[in-house]
Image 1 (cartoon, one colour):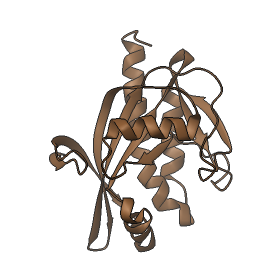
Image 2 (image 1 turned 180 degrees about the vertical axis):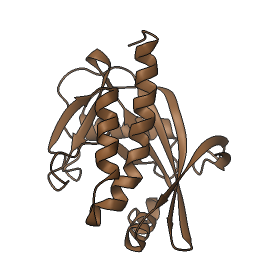
Image 3 (image 1 turned 180 degrees about the horizontal axis):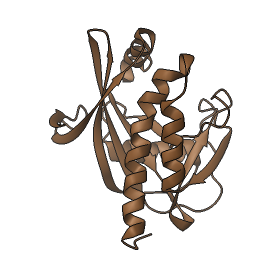
Image 4 (image 1 turned 30 degrees about the vertical axis):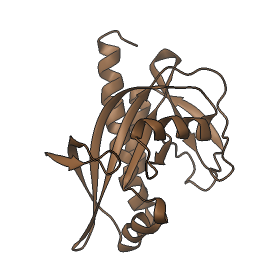
Amino acid sequence: MRTPVRNLIAGNRMTARIVEIEVEPWYLHKLATQRGDEDTRTEVVLVLPRPAGRVLVITKPFYPPGTFRMPTGGVKPGETPEDAFRREVREETGLQSEPLLTIETMVLRCRSGDQTLDIASHLILGSPTSGCPRSNDPDEDISGYDEFDAAALRDAAERLRNLEGRWGGWGLFRAPAHLAAADFLAEEYRRGRI
């Protein structure tokens, strides 16, 4: 389903796909409160091209073993998604990449019982990156990087969707972006663009 949503930063209207996600009450509360005054209910997902049709993914030491995901970050008040993309690339990878294309904007409609929370998620393709990534933000706690092609992103999405326990809601929240990026990369590869 597609519906117009309001971009909370720019005040623009855009068309976005709604992705319904059932989460535990505590995870919905966490999503609603974790960013405090900086909460715009808008995030960017960094699709950072690497050689051979791959994109950069990260892991953190406290993730379930073998769990990787594309870097993400919240859009701060007064920022555009493109500005947030540039800032998050610097903070999470130390690389240089400019936003080229919004692959998709989806609204992650998180539901627990009769409560819902919508978060706009902008999947932004950046210019190709090279060099070794490294975090410039000590609060990020990134412990590793890898490069995934479309098939590996689909596998990552499946792994995220099947996380259990306290990781279940987080995995369901993160999986849709990986599937959308995988579809985009597969189509670009099929057309010979990567």
